Image 1 (cartoon, rainbow, N blue to C red):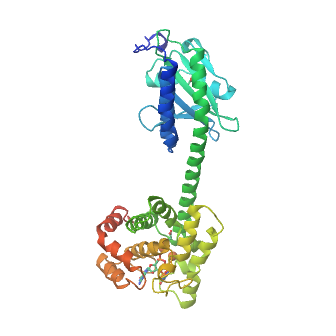
Image 2 (image 1 turned 30 degrees about the horizontal axis):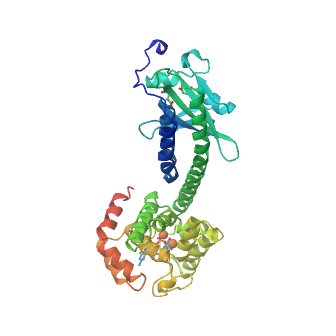
Image 3 (image 1 turned 90 degrees about the vertical axis):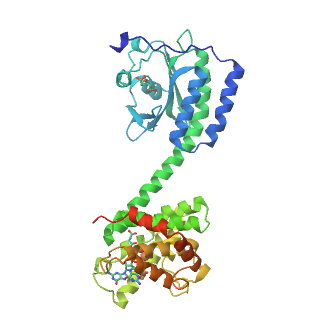
Length: 381
Ligand code: C2E
Ligand code: SIN
Ligand code: SIN
Ligand code: SIN
Ligand code: FE
Ligand code: FE
């Protein structure tokens, strides 16, 4: 039994003096404010807790209200550990909102031995401190394990120090969690929408990925900032979302479209634009622009508005090249894929007609990049 195993021999330390504590806090404050990645933030906070109270281990646990679990990142790596939110000391501290100090975990009925059994680590002393968001709701807890001083137990002072760290952490974590959730929500939404478009026009997921990557590379080459290029990459899978409103008889027609059919097909641009036009979110505004303008042409002969040259948003001019390059590279219900030579001749021939000439130049100067993406995300049918 673990209970009888010797506890690890620690490098015993002396309690920190006040000025040493301050030094630790200042060192970490900079790191915490600079970190926007939630997983990394959890590790930084755990390191802070460990340094402040001289624990052998420290973990920051966060609550997931959908699964009723508490989760954390294990010390080395990105693996998440989850426990039921009523389990163990940490669950107790979370659900009661109380801090707890335990001298010997194995003498305490609240202890959940499962983690020790799976890690082979021997827990003795424990300190748990809940932390709250700005509405005062408990959102997680700090857990320090095994005090590394001669006494081997956490003190009232440790509790006060870690409570201070927890009140600061709660606020940084809250904004990071919100940010994280927003990004996740957006990503899910985009994937769902992309899938709707795909399943309707019977194209594979790789089509969407390739158009996203071609657009990103072209945006970077055109000198757009990282954040603009990333927005374009995220939004470009939605360029054809308006096709969901086009009847199958047209969308899946194996041969050429009649004039009337093509007129209806053209409305996929304005339909997509109308889906996103009312949003103020940068991502959806980008999607609105791309949906609307990806079939405009440099010489003014495109649709729906016959915009020309720089009247067409740079996002639209970039997606036009990415979309046609990919459409020509792929089998469609109405045509076979073209050879790379035929595609290159066509793109050059359309330089300054369909496409922005300077973007076409950048495309050809970096043709290897685009051909690599095409191979990497090629079709396996
Ligand atoms: P898509 O299949 O994603 O094609 C996007 C764009 O790639 C086309 O926009 C066009 O600029 C270019 N493209 C694709 N295939 C060819 C081709 O064989 N030759 C040339 N020169 N360009 C090509 P476009 O023409 O505005 O078409 C928009 C959408 O309308 C297409 O998206 C497709 O869904 C549909 N569509 C266009 N032509 C036909 C057709 O003949 N039959 C059917 N069933 N659908 C078509
Ligand atoms: C932890 O979950 O923070 C570590 C628990 C342990 O290894 O006993
Ligand atoms: C807890 O019981 O506090 C959670 C993990 C552990 O067993 O140390
Ligand atoms: C889509 O983006 O899933 C529609 C396919 C296309 O671009 O033609
Ligand atoms: Fe389109
Ligand atoms: Fe397309």
